[in-house]
Image 1 (cartoon, rainbow, N blue to C red):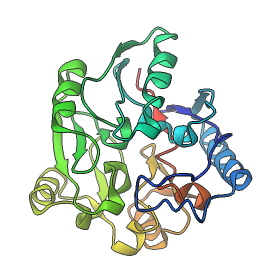
Image 2: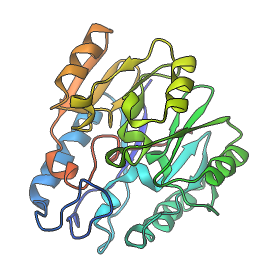
Image 3: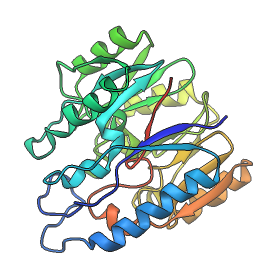
Image 4: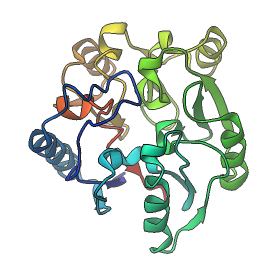
Length: 263
C-alpha cells in the first residue's frame, strides 16, 4: 500500500553545533549537496508511488530536515516532540502546528521525546528507544494518547542515539536491527519478539544503514550499507540505495528525513 510521508527541504541545513557524535562544526557540510541528495530521496519515494507532503523549513533550525524527529503519527493521532537540546526545541511546535492546521488530533508532549527518532510503529506495537534522548515517561504518555502498546528498549552506544539509527521495521511484524546498540536485556526482548529479524553488523550500522525506510517490499537505504543490502535482497526485498552523505554529517539518513503519516 502507498504510504504518506512528511519531509522538510534542507534549505537551512548546516552543521554549526554538535549534539551527537556525528556532528563536527569545524568540518561543516555542503548545503547544496545536501539539497540534491534530499531531492533524490524524495524522488525515490514518489517513484515508488508514495505520497510526499512538505513542511516549510524555518530559518535558524538547521536540523528541521530530520522530519522523523518532529512527531509520532498513529491512527490519525499526533504525539508531538519535545526535544532534549535547546537548539532543536522550536521544531516540536512547528511540526505539531502543521498537523493541527490540517485537522489532526494532536497532543503536546509533557516529557522529552524525539518523535519517530525513538518511536517505531509496527502493526500491533510501538517500539520505543531510551538511553540518550526520549524518556520512559514519554513512552507511557504516548501509549495513553495513541492507545497502542509501547515496548521500551534501551540504547547504549552514543553513535546510535535514536532508535531509528539502530533498528527499522521491515513490515508490520518484523524488523532489522544492530544488536550492539542495545543493552543485553533489550537484545533479549528483541530476540523474543522478532526471532526472524534481520541482524546487521557493525560495518553497516556505522554508516547508518539501519536508518532505512521499508514499505514491506522496497527498502530505501544508505548506499554504503552493502552487507545489509545483500541480506535484504536474500530475504526477498527490493533495495533502493540512496546517497545521503552530507546529511549523515549531522547524524541523519533516509528515515531521519521521513515522518510517516498514519491516518
